[in-house]
Amino acid sequence: MRKIDITKTSTLIFFLLFTVACKNDQKIIMPATGASKKAESLSVEAIIAKPTSLSANIEVPGSLLPFEETDIRSEISGRIVQLNVKEGVNISKGALLIKLFDGDLQAQLRKLQVQLQIAEKTAERQKKLLEIGGISQQEYDLSELQIN
Image 1 (tube, helix red, strand yellow):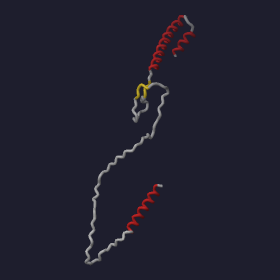
Image 2: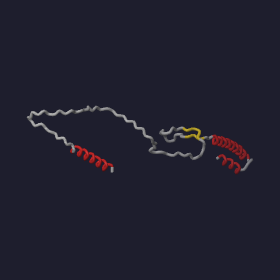
Image 3: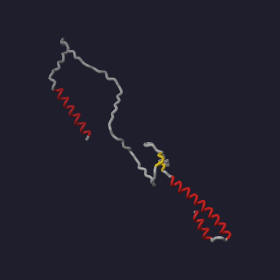
């Protein structure tokens, strides 16, 4: 489609130039060789072409869209405490992008660690009791199961 438009445009320009050139009614008289007629002098204006550099800054309103984008969603909801990535920066696999508020999770972890310590001490005591026959094997197995 674009080649056809360029061809049509160039043909039209050539036709217009040809018709303008043909309408010129002035006749050019060439002096005969050996004739004593004075040749008419022509005045000509000339410009010497020099290479120069051009810089054109064009300001156009618009918006840029990325070639590729990825949506990142968290598996759990929470409040963002720290954002470790700037927009447009490449990141490597395994990098920490966002840190969520984890105060409640840290409290749960400490609670479970304390419960594990209590269960281990209880298992030690019940093992001693089992050796002297103070409790049954089933009670000792339940305390070991609780630790695991």
